[in-house]
Amino acid sequence: MPHRILIIDDEERMRWVLCKALEQESYEAEAAGDGIEGLKMLDKHSIDLVLLDMRLPIMDGMEVLKRIKELYPSLPVIIITAYGSIEMAVAAVKAGATDYITKPFDIDELVIQIKKALDVHRLVDEVEFLRSELSQRYQDMLLSSKSPCMQEVYELVRRIADSDATVLLTGESGTGKEVIARTIHYSSRRADKPFVAINCAAVPDNLLESELFGYEKGAFTGAVARKAGRFEVADGGTVFLDEIGEMSMNMQAKLLRVLQERSFEHLGGNDVISVDVRIIAATNKDLQYAMKSGYFREDLYYRLSVIPINLPPLRERKEDIPDLALYFVNKFDKRKAIKGISKQAMDILRLYSWPGNIRELENAIERAVIICDTNAIQPAHLPISMQTPKKESSVLDIDIPDEGISMEALEMQLIKKALDKTGGNQTKAAKLLGITRSALIYRMQHGIT
Ligand SMILES: Nc1ncnc2c1ncn2[C@@H]1O[C@H](COP(=O)(O)OP(=O)(O)OP(=O)(O)O)[C@@H](O)[C@H]1O
Ligand SMILES: [Mg+2]
Image (cartoon, rainbow, N blue to C red; front, side, top):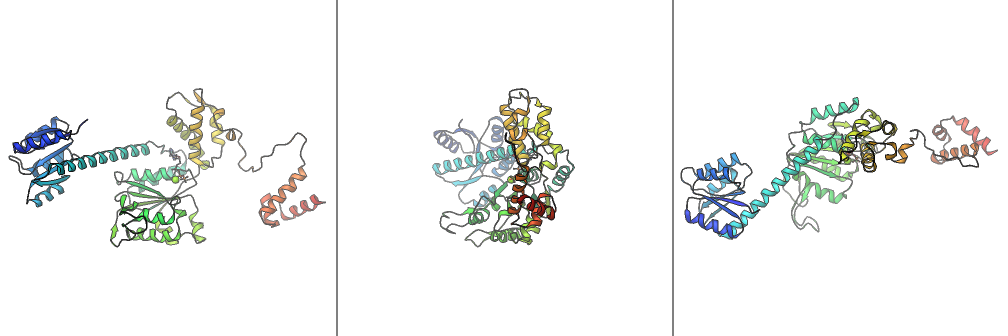
């Protein structure tokens, strides 16, 4: 569908010339001789862009512009001004005009401006659409819980969302750290600004620096043009630093400065760039341990953990398994053919230890939904390894062969394994096996004789 452009100009000749030129460029053109007529046409037709002359009878251009911006805030308006009235053009841009062009102008130049304005408008629309879709997706998450520790987490998230305080999310892989980070962003006043995530483990150190802070042209080989860093892109919004525990000491020092001053420089640049960003960091590492071992800066740790939030593993919030499982069934069962999960299958889900947490549960249900050929998920639809639940403490999985097995030989193997693991330390080996050191020595001697 061709874009429709409205020309508001009191000079009939100008209207005619512009209409012809635009039609030649395959635009549809409408024209009005004054502001009142122009506003009426905006109301009647769907217009994609306005060309607005500043010198108009009845209502002057500035007034018309303000009215348009009130009624259609995102509609692009290009101002046409007489030569020598730059000040007025600047005032118009401040009042929301997209761009301006001074008379006399070249039609080709105007057409380029129109194309540019329509492109930008389309991108802005697209970003807005994607953002609202994403935000909707995060509102659709299952953010309620029957488990007291998760209820506490959600309550805390609600309370701190609107503050600018830095958040440190910790928890095993798959416990929902990124989900919580996005929930915080989309329920804060920053929601309509970017949420910019960067995985510190996935990007090599030197690249991480240029990704985060941006660079000037020529800052290093390959820096062919100036590039904004993620902190700038996120201005007004949130930066999510995922897997912060993997960040090198060198980068940690640089990040600390940003946290302290909310400003930085591009690589190869001198200008200090200030940004307004909220920082949320996440890790599945034990940062306290990393700090004690000298791999994580203590000062950075305290800067990051203004609000620490620990997400419990799924095995510690088993009461949430049924709701989550049903939520995922609904999510993946596009045909709406599955009514639920059979009691036996639910028992298996509840008994399992979920080392991969919510992500593992999500994957298991996605698979079950695909292979489910009845109206409820049955044990047979779950992975085999889940169907025969092992005791959580059982580490050995031995099949007894038909010819039988020697307990004594097994015991010796176990003792040997424990000693190997502890580098021959009998006290530690005995502890691993749950017996006293003297019992271990007794068994070793009797096994050997
Ligand atoms: N409350 C929730 N409701 C629905 N789905 C969730 C919820 N929490 C997490 N998930 C799902 O579980 C999966 C893992 O979540 P997420 O990526 O946030 O975990 P993570 O802690 O960042 O994991 P990792 O440490 O591996 O990066 C995702 O697919 C996510 O959609
Ligand atoms: Mg993650």
